[in-house]
Image (cartoon, rainbow, N blue to C red; front, side):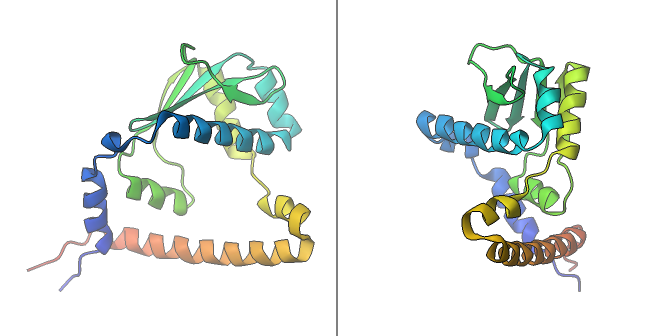
Length: 183
């Protein structure tokens, strides 16, 4: 008798969860978006090629969207990002098509990109794709500045081992998910 994955039950629950009705307050959304912009700029600032590519796209607006959540970013002349004004027209719209938070998390944990519907400027889309392919956050290096090289390396190795185990678990659960219980 085949067993049914517990992820199917959780996925069904999350799909039916009325997330749009549970909107956080506007100030929390705005503050979270500011923090995301700061993090992205920190990462971009470490890559000279990334900032020079973004500088060529100055004043261009990219809108990111998933379910009811949306964020618009504008490229600055310095090659960094800023929040676009509320009335800014998007040059590129990227919509994550996966509605299920669990399926989206599984995709990301497996190291894959989520499915995205792209509309707008092709050149800007190519630059965003280049950034996604080539820019990586060296968290270990940032951590080493705070706690030292050896502790940062030890923490990073532990995190990589946990991430590998989690990816293997999610991968095995994802392959088991199609199996339905037989009666």
